[in-house]
Amino acid sequence: MTMRYITLSFRDCATAYGLPEEALQELADLGWLRLQPQPAAEPLIEDEAEHLARIARLHHELHLPPEGIDLILNMRQRMLQLQYELRRQTARATQLEAWVRRHPSTDVD
Image (cartoon, rainbow, N blue to C red; front, top):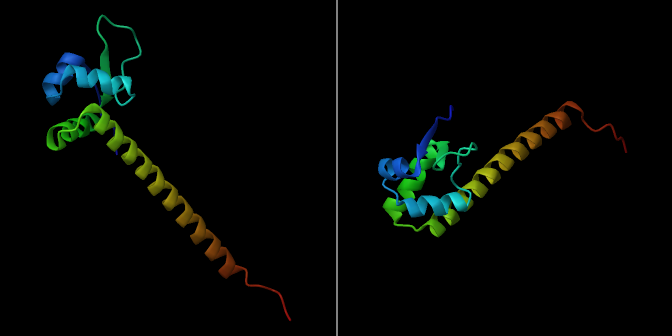
């Protein structure tokens, strides 16, 4: 899946996604919005379009304040980490089962 990054000013992002500039600043302070690393006259948001749309949906559909969005995004990030770890451990268990089948026990009583 290709990530599509966009760069917007706080004002443009507020207009495009219908989010208050104050909420955007608070989400940036919480670390949920990536800011462009080069200093500019005004800070620029440089983030994935899908991520910004997700934040907008949480704000508009669930009427969540920035603190609630922070909580939801933290839980989502943790869920994604757990799903990755589950896939990894399942693959390891499958490899171990295949190895055990190929190498039957040689213990003779």
